[in-house]
Image 1: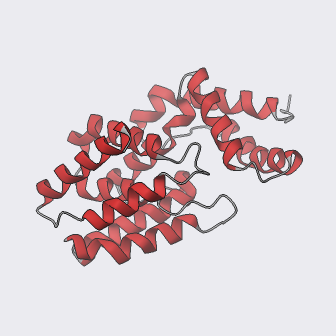
Image 2: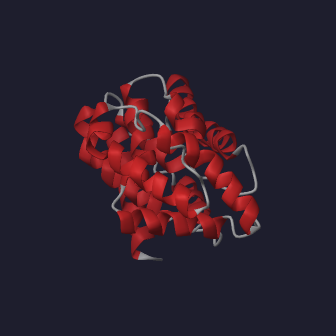
Amino acid sequence: MSDLASALRTRWAAQMKRLGWADGQAAIDGIILAYSEPHRRYHGLSHLAYIFTALDRHEASLTEPARCWMAAWYHDIIYNPRAKDNEAQSADRAVAELPGLGADTALVDRIAGLIRATANHQSGGSDFDDALFLDIDFSILGAPDAIYDAYTRGIREEYSWAPGLLYRQGRRAFLKPAQAAARTFLTDLFEDRIGEQARANMRREFLALGGKLRC
C-alpha cells in the first residue's frame, strides 16, 4: 500500500469515528481502488489528498463538515474520460453506499446534490458549504504556473485517447469563456486570493492550444 493510500485510510477511519458511523472498510477499499485506476493522471489519490488538505484548512467555516467530507470521497469515484455523466454516476454510488455507513436520508441527499454540482462548478450549490467545496475542487485553476502546467499535462494524459485536434477544440471550448469571465470562484475567499491567477493560467493555456483572444 502506498503512503498516500495509507494516509487516506487513516483519515477515513478518523472521520468515521468522529461521526459515529460504521467503520466502512468495504467502502474505503472501493474508494481507494477507484482513485487508483491506471488511467487517472490528475483525478487520483493525490487529488483526493489535495481536497482534504484544503478542507482541513477551512473546516472552521463549514456548517456541515460531513457533507463535504463524503462529497470529497465520492465526487470522482466514477471517472471515465469518455463519459459525460461521471458526476451523476458518482452521486448514485454515494447514494447507494452512504446509508449503510450511517448517513441519514437528508444528509445523503445534500451530499449527492453537491457531487452533481461538480459537473458545473460555477453554477454553484445550495449554500456556503457547497460553494466552498466547489471552489476547493476548482482551485487548481489558480495554482502557481508550474503546478497548473502539471495539472494540464495530467488532464491531457487522461484524454490520451482523443486526437490532438479534438482535444484542443474541446479544451478551448471550456477555457475561452472561463478565462474571460469576470470571476472564477463562488466565494470571495477564493476569488480574492487566486481569481486573477486562475484566469491568467487559463488564458495562457488557451493561447498555447491555438486559441485567439479578441483585441
